[in-house]
Image (tube, rainbow, N blue to C red; front, side):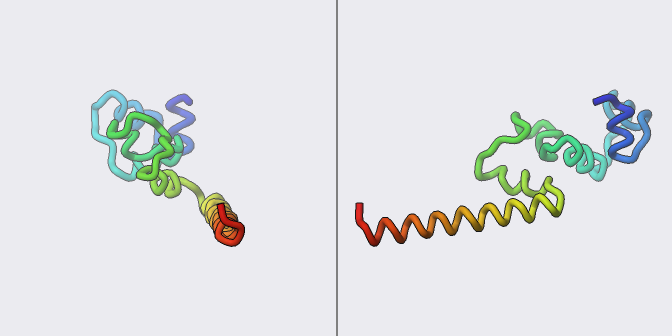
Amino acid sequence: MTQSELARQIGISQQEISRYENGEVKAPINYIIDLANCCNVSVDYILGRETTANEADPDNILSMYNLLDKTNKLRVVERIQTLLELQENTCKKYKKDGP
């Protein structure tokens, strides 16, 4: 992605992005959040506090969820509900039939 493309998606100028990248000025937190959302990574990843962009460990699941738009958040909730139902049914069957 070019600086111009990123600038267009985030709503700032290409010159601002260049200044942030070159360390001429510090990026405000709202820019960092927008950048993380645009790139589908966590703010910690942007800041260098995580080494992988989308690590699927339990501590990072909430961060990834927060990057989703409203529609995809609803999809995640629906899938979780389905998995919980399947898990519950499996447990009931196991208790009923035994090991």
